[in-house]
Picture 1 (tube, rainbow, N blue to C red):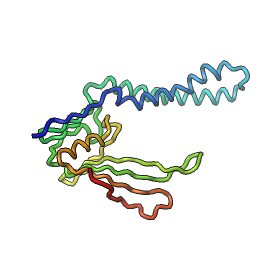
Picture 2: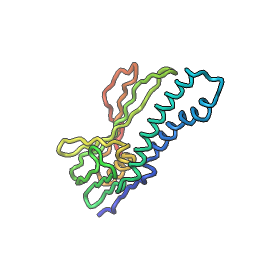
Picture 3: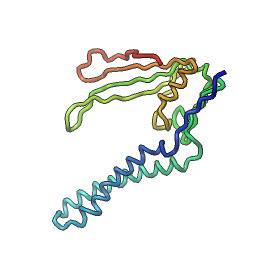
Length: 190
């Protein structure tokens, strides 16, 4: 019998992205209060434009702060436990497909799909890569695991599942500009 595998994520780790967004959102209001508003050489029109930017940025920061507060206030943990023939994936804030409690025998495979596509911004075109994590069950259901809602990297959990004999596949899809073949291609099995 295999040992119990536990993958744990702290509340600080789960909130880290939101903390960064909140800090970025507070830059405009701080800039406005300390640099723009007191400056006499800046016209009223430009002060009004900066004030609107500061207000929008402040709303964005407040939204992130509310999400941070929700994370730290939530009772429970972000933890995935594999053992005794089950995968139990607990999250403190429930979302679609999580929390999850499933027998290992019901999991057909775990899959990570990396999709590359061309995006455009003011500097020109660039390639953006997105990851999608899926659990394929034996009853033909596919559970899509959202990384942010999971509170931890699903790759870590899927690697642990591979240690229990569950197939973990990596697929790539090239949807970049000028790509000839946009179908999904099997890359490797962990």
